[in-house]
Amino acid sequence: MSDVFQGSLFDPPAPDPATAAPRGAAEGFPSLEALKQVCLGCQKCGLAKGRTHVVVERGNPQAKIMIIGEGPGEQEDLQGIPFVGKSGQLLDKILQSIQLDPEGDVYIANAVKCRPPQNRVPTEAEMEACRPYLLEQIRLVDPWILLLTGATAVRTITGDKRGITKIRGQWQQWQGRWVMPIFHPAYLLRNPSREQGSPKWLMWQDMLQVKAKMAELRF
Image 1 (cartoon, rainbow, N blue to C red):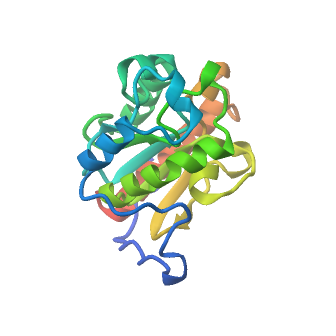
Image 2: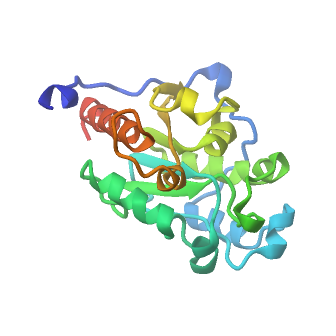
Image 3: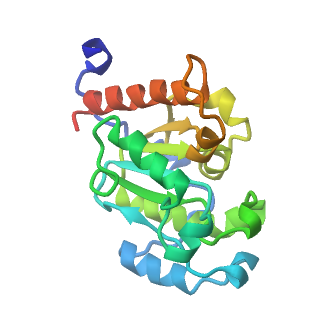
C-alpha cells in the first residue's frame, strides 16, 4: 500500500485566465458569514417556500478539501446542516477510512441549499439560483481539492452532464483546482455489496486516489 501514497511536491496550477470567471459567479462576499446571512434570507427560487432551514455549510472553512453534494434531505432540512442523515453518517465513515476528520479536515456544502420536495433532483433553475453562492463558498474557502458527490454536483460545477458511473474516480482540473467526481453516499446505501467492482469497492479505490493526491500535495 505504501506505493499508493507516494508522490512528489506539487504546486496547484494558476487558474486559466480564459476561464477565470466561472459561470454564475456572484459579487464577492467579504466572508463566509456574510454569504451565509444572505443565504438564510434567500427567496430566489421556489424551494424557499417549503424549507425548514437553509442548509449552508459544515466543517472547516480553512480546509484544503471541499465536498459538494446535491441538496439537503429531511434531516439536513430539520437541522440546518449538510450531510447529517444516513448519507452523511456514511460519508463520515468514508472520510475517516483515509484518516480525514469530517469536521476538521473538510468543508461541506451542497449544489442547492434548500430541500427539494421528496428529495427530488434539483431543477436547472434551482441549481442556477444557488450556483453563485456555491461558487463564492469555493472562492472563500479556496480548497485545493473538490470532491463532487453525484451527477448533480458535477453538473453544477463543471457543466458535465454525463452519468456519474462514467466519470467517477477521474481527476480533472477546474479553476486551478483538482476535482474528482465520486459516488454520492446515498447511492452506496442502495448498493451495499462490498465485492470487487461494486460501487462501495470503487469508492474505496477513489478514496485511495484522494489519499495519494493529499500526499502529492503534501497536506
